[in-house]
Length: 196
Length: 196
DNA sequence: GCATATAGAGACAGACCTGTCTCACCACCA
DNA sequence: TGGTGGTGAGACAGGTCTGTCTCTATATGC
Image 1 (tube, rainbow over the protein chains, first blue to last red):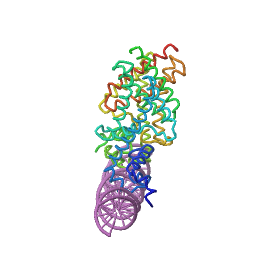
Image 2 (image 1 turned 90 degrees about the horizontal axis):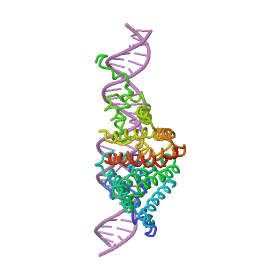
Image 3 (image 1 turned 90 degrees about the vertical axis):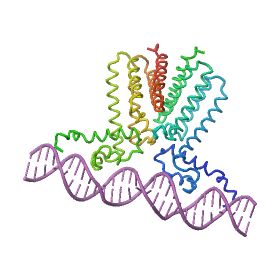
Image 4 (image 1 turned 120 degrees about the vertical axis):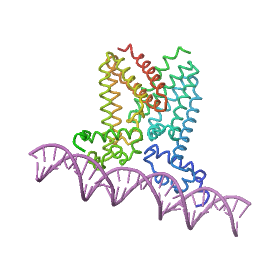
């Protein structure tokens, strides 16, 4: 075909990452075979292996891509919010929308941690890095309104609520998950309010 | 060998379940092969397939065995506690000890949910059943001291904290996980205190 | 003693896994 | 025009997966 119909070629690599992302999310890391990825991406096997030396590398790149997209989204949303409380609330909004989206399949990073138990494995580290990054983000937000120790404790609690809510949403209760998580988050933040 | 040295034969089936449990926990469901299970259990392949028609069945039975052991442990611990708050605190104690145990590898049920995304899959259902059971247990405890609606909301929040804390412990911070989870739990329960 | 049930050992089938390799094709550029 | 680099298609290797099968050995109950 002529060059005009080949804009997808601009980034075959990115196309593979996004296809693999969809499969890992829906089916799992171990359960998704290379053959299926290349079939779904309409790509030759050698094309994939030229961009990614191994499946492990591909998984790490998929996680990195997803983490960056997530971070950019939260950057954009939280910079519009005025107060720490509003920033946190915006994050919960974001999760609530995600829980109700059509292709919600739970947290890819949590699944990666579940499938790769070895802390030395690159996939484990990539996934743990995203979780720690989210906690750090919330801690920095909370330090605007409370002591560092309280911010550390509260951000850990918020992260736990978010992880637990994601699990609950995955078990078929997205409404209850986000509602109860938000209520609990407000209760936690309220106890640290006067510390300002 | 003579009959005296064969008491293990009393329940080959149970021995297979416990061996598989250890492997699934450490390595994962998909990553653990049948061959490895029977090798570790010192059992012939046909012996395993005689007791469990398929690997799926074995996984479900392993989850059921683990869920029952967990329930019995919590039954024993919470019946010794006098008040609802003490019962909840005892559950957190239990999780804290678990986080610090030598062979802690995260929650098998959460891992099962991560690896089997289809809600119709028996493994998914077995895992979701355990989570819902834990939430129900805490809800019943909390209904002694608060309204049904508050107990529902608070038990959901406690479940989320527990799940999130388990994830955090798995990422190498068991101390912070249980400490912050407990503190957050107390804050959540405190806001529902006067509702009694 | 004999029947029945349970188990061990391991070959085997058929599918699927990751990863390598070859060959042909085509777009682009000098 | 001829070289270069990315790509498609698919064979292939070597291993592992689940699950079935056969044959043998042993233990228990009648």
